[in-house]
Image 1 (cartoon, rainbow, N blue to C red):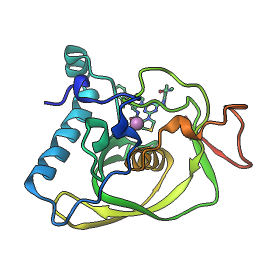
Image 2 (tube, helix red, strand yellow):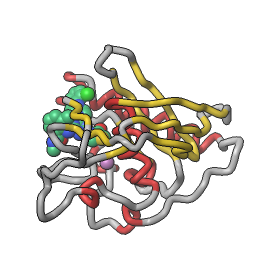
Image 3 (tube, protein in one colour):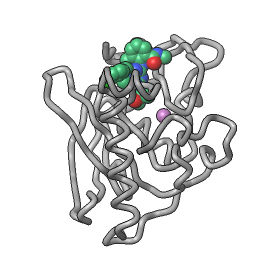
Length: 183
Ligand SMILES: CNC(=O)c1cccc(C)c1Nc1nc(N2CCN(c3ccccc3Cl)CC2)nc(N2CSC[C@H]2C(=O)NC)n1
Ligand code: NI
């Protein structure tokens, strides 16, 4: 099972690389990797298991974070309506997005960053995304709210971008006109 020791931290070169497209249909090794990443998120959200193994809570994890430079990530969260969003994406893309931005009012955290970095990360408020699941089937979704934030945070990891690259150093809490807060 994946543990925090398997998560690479900022400073590791893989976090700044462009991850490679995954050939379709995905091979068994890639499917196994995605399964272990999803299990890690489930464990990280379980009060007993996360405590026992010292796993930090997360709702998204990208393959480069376990030093696998491939274009795939997993998400598992409940949105503000309590609806569960549980996805494994292979070769994910944003196909269109809103002009409006949204941001987490508490800032963003990352399992590969062992420090708290204050500031707002403004992202597209609504996105239309496409990718493939572990069966190689095409998935197309419209996301907003926390799921949209998490998708963009994890997609950034596939392009060597860290959340704090988006924070304005001079004014970390500056907001664009009409930015939507997400608690
Ligand atoms: C610096 N301030 C903060 O960290 C921060 C501080 C307060 C609130 C928020 C909202 C913050 N921000 C933030 N909190 C999260 N979690 C809250 C705790 N939760 C969780 C933890 C334990 C069990 C179950 C769960 Cl559900 C897991 C998810 N996750 C992300 N991100 C940014 S997008 C990818 C996503 C991610 O998975 N990061 C590891 N940001
Ligand atoms: Ni991250």
